[in-house]
Image (tube, rainbow, N blue to C red; front, side, top):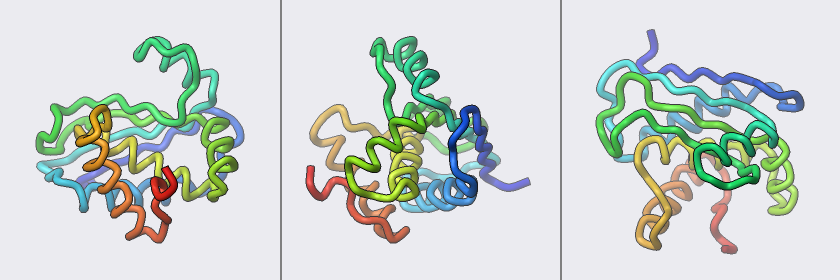
Length: 156
């Protein structure tokens, strides 16, 4: 059994083929560059959903009646050793497509960014304060650069 098992569940139409490998590479790089330490066999799921599903989850768990690009549901204490069930990352296809077009980046690059972003949330990183955002966004930028993806925060 692999030390880190990633289950990618396609639960909506329209998602392109080949995202499992991109997901594994992105999460592997995020794990290696973060402060997280793998402390045993670990598992996480990445759910490829649609805007309707994402809107319901966002409303139920965050009180926001709208879709969002990515939601993370951690099962770990923040910054604890990584083992067991890490959590779930849920992505909304239509929102991701729209944002990629608006940002003039490829779907794959934006998908990779959101997977990294969601995974860092599972580990305990956040962006609620300016200081947290600087740390998290800096780490995302570093991880994405290693994967050959431009800084998503360069113009923000």
